[in-house]
Image 1 (tube, rainbow, N blue to C red):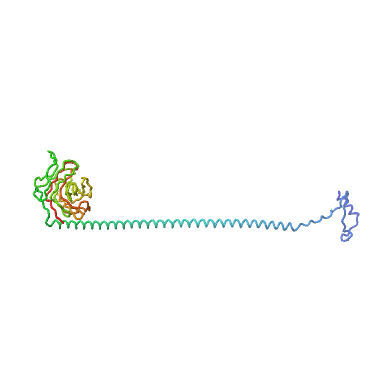
Image 2 (cartoon, rainbow, N blue to C red):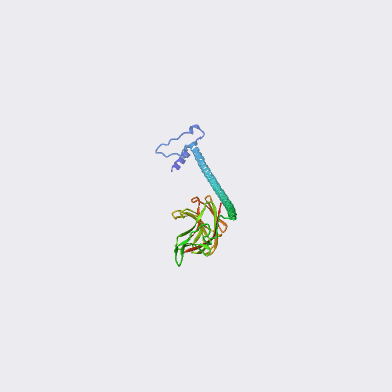
Length: 343
């Protein structure tokens, strides 16, 4: 309807010169009336340049954030990569160090084992050398002392008694303290030998040459054990005036030997004992016993072979004699060819 009114007015109104300044007027719209057509142009609203700058800034900020994120991601990846490289390198270094340490430990263990083995070899060689030297020295000593005995007994004896009877200068004890049908105890000449017997188990029977006195000497007698399981028979020397204190060197039928020291109370103290292949074993077997006594040193021999050396200064001089010990059953031993060489 507004459109029709506008057309009517345009027919009746004269043409308007739009280039005239008078026609360029702002038409006021009166309230309650219909506005003219076309409506006046709306004033252009000029957009602020600040909004464009804000958009650009936002875009730039977004780009910066994106770039920062990318940089952070790249940096994190690089850090992780380097960290992984460092971890791998550290692990490899540790593994290498462990391998090196293990190799060094194995090398040290091997070297130590070799050193220990070498030390043992050296110790064994040294011990063997010392043992050989000791054996050589012992052999040389035994040979020397055996030669010493041979040289001494090759001379004329001071006392030489066959013990066939009591006609010699020694004046040997005679008499039986116990005489039974089974066994006897005492000293007696029988069948051209001197017999010493003991019937009581655990007892010693001494028989003394009362007319003797020696300090430095070689004393030698032939001994035969005729009876007595585990019996002992041998030589007495350095017998004191009471016939109670003396040295007793004896052997057994099993090849054993010993040297005991008896004091005046009858108590025995063993000074040495051992076994020797030089002793002929078994009952009825004859063995020659010798003692080399000089200045508290006593060298013991069996059948001319050196056994052992004993040093003791309890007794210095005395008489000589013979004796047996009953260890288990009554013992009977016969003696012959008693000889003494004074030194």
